Length: 250
Image (cartoon, rainbow, N blue to C red):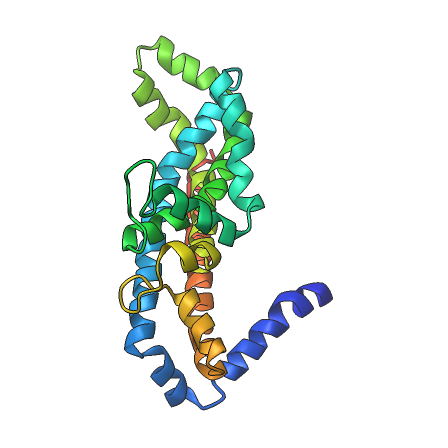
């Protein structure tokens, strides 16, 4: 508890204190600024899109790594799944600009757009989706799937009615962690988004701008909103996950 308090709880109390240093009216005035509201809206909407996309893509990648682990392709991509964790996010931004910027070798110039925000968030949060599902999928007993197949169920029906219910709690866990991580992404977005106010500027960049301008109350107020959003999201995802687990129990 001492370690948790020093590392997490006390810093959050300090942010809360700074955010309300001018009273509730000052707090509301800071977070209701047009620039802040636009940044928070873009951050939340982009994070929700990333949650859906990575839930699908992450489950597919985990399936490949577990069920087709002997293939050359699975062996090659396996170590790269954790690359977004290892790379500093600023370097991730440079990589994304090189691939999807004005001189894109794929001729897909999406830099400095809202699409770029979604792509950057998806890049840094994909490992949460994959690594949450992979161990659960590896531990599943395939006898139920084989029984369903022997009774004439199609591969899609077997996955949807037999496998997916067992994977749902893990998918939800990865989605919750990915959403919270996407809310606070900063490094890669400072490069590929262009930080255009009211267009491609996310909340974390707005907070950094407040800090640079020595406006700590505004930075703390916006940070507190992000913290509250992440906490509420994690609680919601955790509740949904527990309901899926309860539904699976006999």
